[in-house]
Image 1 (cartoon, rainbow, N blue to C red):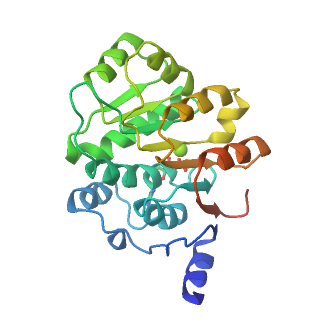
Image 2 (cartoon, rainbow, N blue to C red):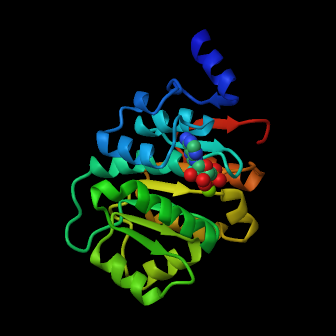
Amino acid sequence: HAEVAALRTSLGIRVSGFDAPKPVQTFEQCGLDGALMGVIKKAGYQKPTPIQAQAIPAALAGRDILGIAKTGSGKTAAFVLPMLVHIMDQPELEKGEGPIGIIVAPTRELSEQIHKETRRFSKPYNLRICAAFGGLSKYDQFKDLKAGAEVAVCTPGRMIDLIKMKACTCKRVTYLVFDEADRMFDMGFEPQVRSIMGQVRPDRQTLLFSATLPNKVDRLVQDALTSPVRVTVGEIG
Ligand code: ADP
Ligand code: MG
């Protein structure tokens, strides 16, 4: 235990939550397959950032996660890598089913960035990573989702629109990510966020990231996460 505490101190993270796993010091310790190790290497990532060091092993263990970390801390890989492992463990999609993973971010720019990164990391697996945010044709997105995609990267408003248009259901979703939750709430997306949550089976894995933890976001965490591992990077939160 002293060893784990020292490791966390050296990473500058604070962790709480029942039985949180030990942080990793290297990507090799995560037990990822050769394909993912290849894309990590290709991305030029030498070792995990502090949020990745704690969140990746916890997410791989199937835990819900509350990550309090600001921009630039490497959150994307922290939720995308375990998501890909999760998806590869699920039964394949039947025709027209999907998605299995949904990633929700507040703005088009942020979801675009996550969409790109997710495509990059998922390349060896040939997964269908669908975009569901503004600035692109809603009709094309409808078709992509309807055809079946393992992952949807979205903004809350566009995702709700597409669900209402019956582009997809949330029946197969077992991995749900909310990124920059405080910003989503600042932008007034709490109803859409809660609506998406309400459509996904309660025994899903849920990961929520936020730079700060205002009361509203904390209430959502209470409502939507089950026995989460809470990771705070640095002095914020
Ligand atoms: P956040 O979402 O927390 O703002 P990102 O996931 O966008 O952070 O990562 C910020 C930058 O750091 C990106 O350019 C990303 O490619 C890079 N990065 C992420 N993880 C690592 C790592 N382990 N080693 C080196 N660079 C990394
Ligand atoms: Mg980000």
